[in-house]
Image 1: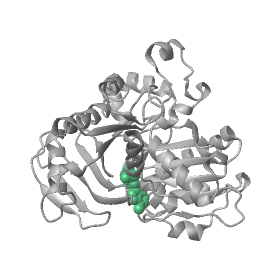
Image 2: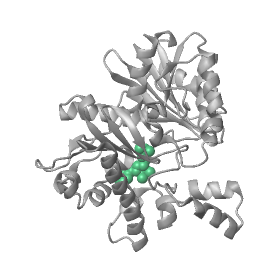
Image 3: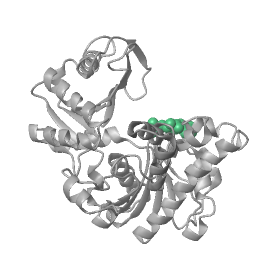
Image 4: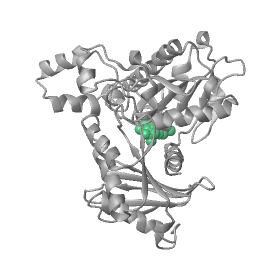
Length: 400
Ligand code: AMP
């Protein structure tokens, strides 16, 4: 079965075409600057083929998706004889509210529900929907599936998802913790069970997803019981440019003191905070880690704050889970930063974690591995995430 996976952002479209009979990637790439001048399309045949970059006008998502279809079916590097070979399309949809606890076949009703959740994810759900509608326009009979970032966390109990504010906000407006990165947390948890050689439904796991956005999840017997992102992806860990947890009174105080408007404050918390805000150097951890620990005091402070927050959550989730078999690191920073992993896991032997610093140093760039000593009671694993594969698998399940 040939499944196309699409992740449509406001100005980008990430795509990956799978042959799920052999679980291989036939082609993948990225459309950038959708709706802007200077749009480009990357195309890579196979998982590790040479990347080709094409310049073309991509005025909207429909044009972008039509170009992707053209690259997949024409020219020297085509991987499909025609679009008839395509069996289904799976979409990453950021917010499904509390309506979806698993992936679903896209129908008019599901599209309406995604539209209803725009109020929760105004930057993400509209372009996600544009992708769905663009495919519908080009291939009206193809089956499409929605895979939600929030679905995995629907197993949380009220004590984990209700905020301590007047209950009316939950009852009337569904204001609660939803959590995000569900597809990634789900993937690395099941992969961890395979690596540990134990059934997932016997394990207590803490998964740490550190990319541009960062979140951590407590998983008991394969089910999410708590996660750090909340009603929006702003809560929890400190991120590249997002503040994460904060004394809510500070927001009022800063707005008053600096006479900031709501959009200005929103911008400050989402775009100018996190490690960028502290360091004033960069939101990219690679820049802060260069020459570590001799770069600058502020670069070190940003890395320390970032890591301390992760350590604190790991401790909290060990308490929530009443134990832990393994901590799993994933995504850009989680997979590639021995520095952050070593700061976080330093002095955790009382909690049963003994890092093997040598293994930690050499485990990165797509490698999977256990980075603890043989006598470490709690294992620490590095597992590259693969959200696209989960979307392709869910798509097959929904259309079969
Ligand atoms: P993702 O959202 O998973 O693609 O992750 C993107 C983030 O990963 C970037 O913002 C970088 O800060 C981080 N990253 C990528 N490579 C490295 C690396 N070698 N060391 C530290 N951070 C990295």
